[in-house]
Image (cartoon, rainbow, N blue to C red; front, side, top):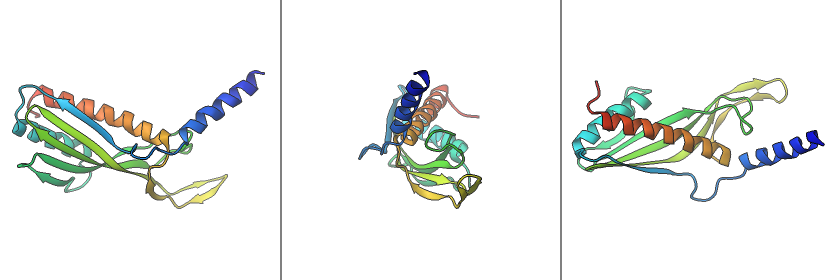
Length: 164
């Protein structure tokens, strides 16, 4: 009886992970309220943090406009092992847009893309990898959790003052 119950429970959990993402459910938004911080201070500190965190090329920032307080970067987070991706590998890429104002930073992450690395599996053979839009709730929930951790780190950096 226990093995049957465990099997049913595992199928239920696995089924939830591979459910399609709801329409409009592929964006992450967060506002950080930082009292006594000017727009220029927040812009400079945010820019340094973004370059350090997502600086994987010579020009990590895709777009920036100091007058409007906008910074746009392309970022990615490693994709974990799991039910949807049992072999691991690859990453979840996204576009992060930061809008900076006095005492406030608004962050929006969207355009989520799964990037699978090429691999060989003894059971299924070769997989060429590729890129496709994020489709499953399990991947979106993972991305939201990781982005919440990243924005918490950004908030800590913005509160601590000038970066070295």
